[in-house]
Image (cartoon, rainbow, N blue to C red):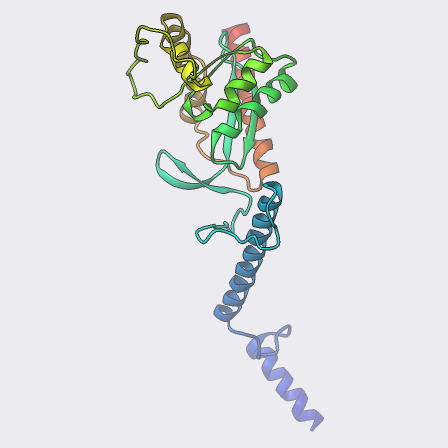
Length: 257
């Protein structure tokens, strides 16, 4: 019996290999089991995110559930679905603040948030941290416009010019209509009037020659159109390196160009 057992073991080793018994699950079934485990893990993570969000908003976290259309990426779970020029993509939100004299990046960050409205205040603090001072004047597109952001700029003593609506490409801001603003005008209303004045239109028009060329140089000239690493910490380091090399190239041209 022992001799027959040894013969059978040798036969199975020839068929399946010495490290296999022959009764393992087929490759397809193993893949499905792995995928099911990942799906369960993703579900638990989405449930935890929903609870954390509810807790932050002062709601009952125990009964919180993720939205029906909430998704989680298996390749990079820390990325988020965002709308880009080519449709919806799995992405991060890269931020950069640029000074007007030499197009140097004076503040940079990466966030998982889709909406830019929540990024203006953190970026101002980032500029202060990374550049050593607050900006005296700030230009920003309509994605950053909100009552809270305008009030924050006023409180910080920053002369801000934040677009209150989307501009059509090549179409300038319309001049303001005559007459005073109503007494109940909001901060957004006042900002809109500020941008419609002759000086406001001239100042905001400079934005297209300050920050937009920088993103064009990074994307088009240097070919950086997507992050190559995964995970928010690695992506932050990658974006910081991109911004650093942009500044080095600018400073080289300033000194030796």
